[in-house]
Length: 273
Image 1 (tube, rainbow, N blue to C red):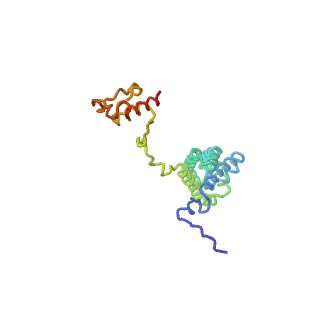
Image 2 (cartoon, helix red, strand yellow):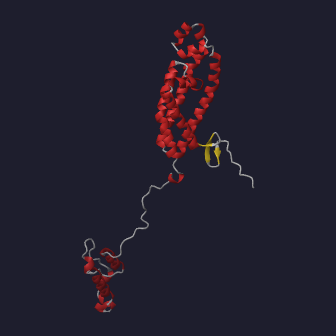
Image 3 (cartoon, one colour):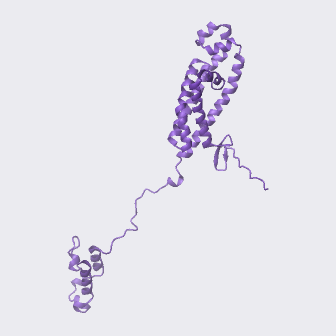
């Protein structure tokens, strides 16, 4: 058996001609899983709110009441935006993917707002054990933080949060940029459509029927022959005066009335009668 062909890994996350996420997942599949995960998390939060809030704190925050409410609203709304992201990745609908992309951007902004609320309370966690009244006066009544302080879990909770939260943020950022890349691929205009000429037809291949009265009159005029009455009476094409008509005895120069002029007149009469 011959040796298997090695995969051509690129430093930018490409395998051959296909963009990859985490070096092994096609970008379209990754976006589908990111959006499906957001939808699943919304369903779990809707069904088991308190258990999910407790387990997610080391990953996404929510220790302060303000951050908890903000995260709940955003993650519950992912029931809609995540479903649109799944459908957009499945059917390659740019408009649906863009809605999920905007949701991801808003979720990332909320992440930094969460840090602003949660970090001060985590750093003052022991105050809830030593002086609960002072903690409530400073941060408001927060049952979750007071319970952690009373159980002596402040150090462990801080360690978990400062380790897991940045990793989770990096994971969400990768999902955000994956959606951005997939959108760019879907909405990219092919290069051969960018320089389509806008001019109308040049007229180089203009054609005109040769069986009309006007065309027959022009042929008589070009040949220097008098235009027959059947043709000359056509509106817009009067009798054309030619040098042959003006010359005395021109009709006899072809051998009398039976010459070529009379033959052309007879031919025109048979054609248009």
